[in-house]
Each structure stands twice: as C-alpha cells, then as structure tokens.
Image (cartoon, rainbow, N blue to C red; front, side, top):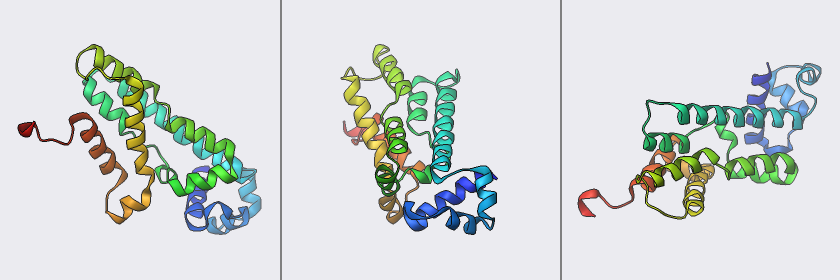
Length: 186
C-alpha cells in the first residue's frame, strides 16, 4: 500500500503541483483519509519516503555497477552516469522548483544527491591514472557530466522531442566520452 500511495503522490504532483491535499490523495487512491494516515502522517512523510527509496535505489544500482568484475572501466563509468532511479518522473525541474519553495529540507537532499557523485569521481580518477581518460581537472569533468545529465530534468524538452530519459542519458554519455566528431574525421 505504501508504494501505491507514493505513486499516487507523484501523480498528484504532476496534476496539481505540490498544492494538493491529503484528501485529494485519498480520493485518487479510493481510500479513506484515515487509511491514508495509517500509512503516512503527512505529505512530508510521503515525500521523505519517495526520496529515501529513490536515493537508496540509486546508490544500490551504482554500487552494483562499480563492483561488477565483468564490466570494463569505461562500461562502469557509462553505467554509473546512466543510472535511472525508481520514481524518476520525480526528477523534473518543475517539481524540484516547487519542492524548493514548499519543502526546502527535502529539496536540499535531492539537490545534494544530484550534485555529488563520489563513485563517478573515483572511476574518472582511475581512468586518468590508467590513461583511459585525458588528464583534465577532475572537478571540472565531474561538473560537466553532472550538468549534462541534470539537463534530463527538463522533462518538457524531452517530451516535445520524443526522447526518453534513458535515451537522453545514453546520448549524453556517448557525446561526453567519445565527442561530437566522427573518428574518421578527427
């Protein structure tokens, strides 16, 4: 029931922004407010549960990629950059902007997570040491990657251009890792 409530919470955000009530959520779910409150005491608690679940899954997927002995270093870098967590529809500039105003503590958690990729930094540093990646300022490389991948938060652009988040991330990574110029033209 909790995951059903969290999914309905996200649907309410998309339909009504953060301004919906627990009554609206109960109606969407076809349950009483009392039943809803048996599972979550507030909208903030639901939001925290969504963030916790999303960040935990992101970290779990990232760790699995980093530890996979079958993957090359380049595959690990690409894999870490393209991890898409559960509730990925939650990662939208419109929603995050509303969250920043109404739920600043929760926004700060998401903002920090979107801008701090320690596992990726370690992989990039390893790539530089091994000569796979050009020797550049690692902080700059990480910033470029983060800013490029965070562009997927502009869901309207991707919707208008019929591009899924996964397709966008794959293309972003290919451009970042292999460039814009065709190899036979370089």
